[in-house]
Amino acid sequence: MITISFNGAVNVDNVDLYAEIFNGNRQNPNGCQIKGTFFTSHKYTNYSGVQELHRQGHEIASFSVTNKDDPQYWTDGSYDDWLAEMAGNRLIIERFANVSDGSVIGIRAPFLRVGGNKQFEMMADQFFVYDASITAPLGRVPIWPYTLYFRMPHKCHGNAQNCPSRSHPVWEIVMNELDRRDDPTFDESLPGCHMVSSCSNIQTGDQFGRLLRHNFNRHFLTNRAPLGLHFHASWLKSKREFREELGKFIDEMLARNDVYFVTMLQVIQWMQNPTELTALRDFQEWKEKCDVKGQPYCSLPNTCPLTTRELPGETLRLFTCMECPRHYPWILDPTGDGSAFK
Image (cartoon, rainbow, N blue to C red):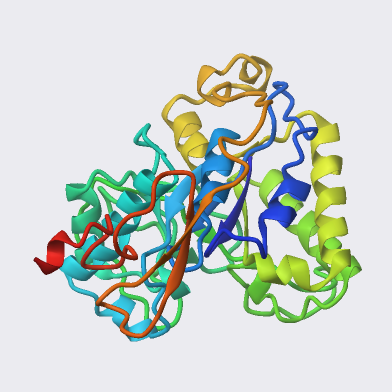
């Protein structure tokens, strides 16, 4: 299993990239289109684009309302901060991208700054199923996703990480660090990188291709833990050769007939009901929204120029197929109806 995920706003800067990667013609061995997971933050997001990704069967998850630039805000966030940021963002997605099937169940913390027990208490109370922010250091073998009922199976890794120390009824789709050595048989060890876009030594398409294939083998030839490829869209857009290389890699993997590109939720569904390769073609949970055709829900979304008391002096545009709210949705007023200020 390979998961492709993107963090941040969905808008005119990246929807063409997503359409290129998930072009409708790339199919998993079960005949269904390959799927990705989009951790969406609110500001600058075009909700008609999110609605279209959801219609195509991709997973939409929460990456916060403000995507605030201060890492400490996330590490030290209170229960109410996490609630307003993550459950508030889910509410905005559900309302303005018309995601009404309760499928926004995952979160990732900006800067991957995990918020300790507070974050996970909020997740359990709000019925979030999984977090995808904890990184596992490069080890002999990668780590499978796990639940936080028990202690984490690796050390709390990363800059100033605030990992949960108590038991929580939440899954962790752990981010295994990628081995970014150019020649793994020869180079001395380098620290791994958790987002592909943070592998700063990857400068050319060839290097990127080697990174993808070496890490695939590291997962596939050991314990087959899902391989997570996590991107910022701007990194893939920065060089045409990166996009071409990713496309080549996806096509090469699909030709093997034993590799599936799935969402985070689909990984959990398989782990809750492990199914061998021969039976996977009929694995029901992976058949949903299998081969989506047809037109987007709306080709001309409403462009709502809005303000909010929370961001004085800013007029922000909200693109949505739904009707415009009265105010720009923000942390105290996620529905944009202004009731928080009455």
